[in-house]
Length: 284
Length: 345
Image (cartoon, rainbow over all chains, first blue to last red; front, side, top):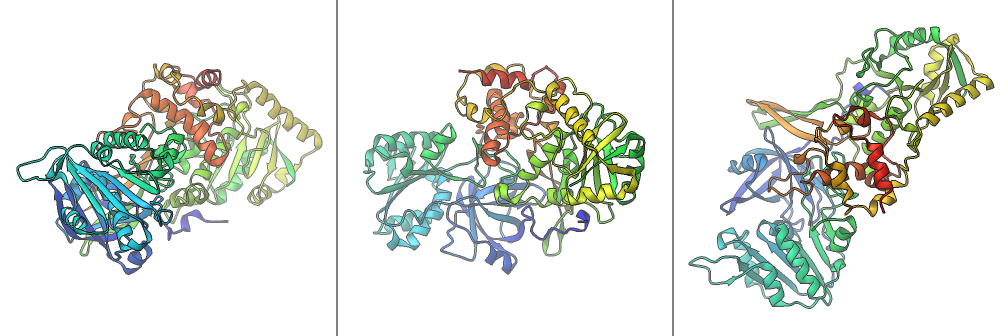
């Protein structure tokens, strides 16, 4: 007879691995990027992820929440999460200055189809903190630059202060093998760049859909308007990929809340193309 | 596997024997829940069903997952084992065929095949726990197990399936464990005759007849696909108080929340039942909520059971136990909900 009570749980997906915050970078008044390193070598080596996946981050006592991994596996050794201060867990994280122990489990979910994108042109369209998940794929593609065609990034935020990854935006701007199109909803005294919304900039640039895969992430209203804009430009639903956000707890397809129709965002998503989302009855 | 019969007045002796090896859990005398049996004679009463389904034996209403404390190296985390090392293995007796079917459906959800991950807490609580079922003598108000494709009234997927034949129980050993359990009863059992088998089939057929309303539970999967935008959801959800009793007491509902509690330098992480009927179930910290409206939440409850889970597993996740019908404080009747939806254009 199997004795349930003598079982140990060597393979417990709910048990986070201990990790240390190595660096905190202030991105905007409400968003920090946390560079995180696993405390144990086997956790570091065992955590093999792809751009677009997410992890559950624990601040013990405050709770656990899912965050997309914004670093790229092509730059190993650490994970980065860009996190806006919003609720209990994120506020607790924002009180950390580096050196503290947190918990990380994952990686979870599917990933951006970086393999299928090979040989294609890429158009990334991000708004605000929505650049965080895209950044993993962008840097992955830049690190494997020869595999991909033209790379264009349209990125905007409410104000210049709300643009995330500023040093990286400057580096991207200087590269000759990609184009960064920046915009802000409202400028300030120092801002000399474009002013206007992301969907308007997309329409103004008017990219041809020929041979392009496009990836968008941002606030829901931006995504809705970007999808309309892309449709008008002749993009097919299958060419458009986005990454979904839903309230999530377990991350492993058990707790039952993050579904869009039959699809659990935690295990079947978070990356979907627009055709799939329409089929699932998502109200994007 | 061979079939047996056991005289009703001997059944208590059998359970007492099993009680030497197992902590026997059976419907409590007050009819509320499964409790450690003290009176083995009353454990196999075929009347009614428990108000709370036996799922809480394996998915407790609240369950500690991890403990953490501030150590010298920073926070130290340990997984909480599902049961204490000294606990006697459990055995469930008197589980109704609907609830037995529901346990199999829950087994699927918590398995690796379902989502790529096995749930170690559910596995630890559930594996090696024998189940003895008992066919109801009479259906309760609101029971419709006869319509549920997952429910086998004559021969549920358990270790030993009992059917009340008046002065004796028909006992079908359905697994090796079941064979051992019957074996532990020794000569309390005798082989069943063809007449016993016929009587068992007749009892099951009789109950099926009384619990069949013709609800197309299996067919709803296709039907619901076309109803996501239907105005019926709003109409049908109007009197709902969003108390969540329909899902908390549902034997197949399994959605849970995970939270931390901390007291100074130590604390624990637990999971507890949650329900799609609460507005904050899908409320994100950003303020976005894809199921803000009660109509969306009724759609989630019905479609999760009858469309999405069937898409994933091939099975409708309603076993017709009738608890949500009997216990809804405003008399919302899932049978009527299903009928309305099934009849929608």
